Length: 277
Image (tube, rainbow, N blue to C red; front, side, top):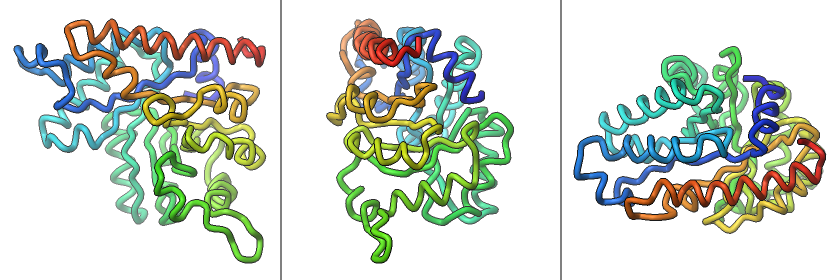
């Protein structure tokens, strides 16, 4: 999927919502365990309830890997279900991989080859040769960690160069944008750092940004849209817990839809203000 195609989906759905499938078996409604396959049935219900309101899904692999083979099986079937029933969705493996080149090549084969994700999140710390193997897959994306939403982001990401005063996340952006292009590389920028988006847009004005931290983490969708939106929207804003755990009863899917629709309607407002739809 190209950036133009992704923007087309955003325009059609009047939404740039990414639903995070951070499926925690300790939070799944209890009635689902009365039958087999509770985790997959939860994912399936959330997807069916929200697919017309979002343009992307992002399973966080930690929630699946923690269950071993069973979790991997659920992950694979979840991706297959989305591909089969909602083929216009952009599917992100939130894996945060990054290692020496030959190891990264195996990670890339796993997620972009065998499992047919559209994109995978990658840590940039080990440099170009740890990232480029992910860029060899046609019509697939690397989503590079640039400025994250957690408190620990201040430990390293804001360190300034003693000579230039450039912050580390700015160096990451300036260096890494030479490795890929706007059709195969986007960046993670946390919504809790929304005020930094204006500075980031001076470095990468045309790249898509994956923005976590809206909702349960307290990020402002209005601020993210104001500072981060470009002429092709350029944003995928992720919401996980606020949507998928909106209710713990048998009405959990309906409640998830209500929350997703609230976000979609707000996004539609900002897209209209920018005359993008």
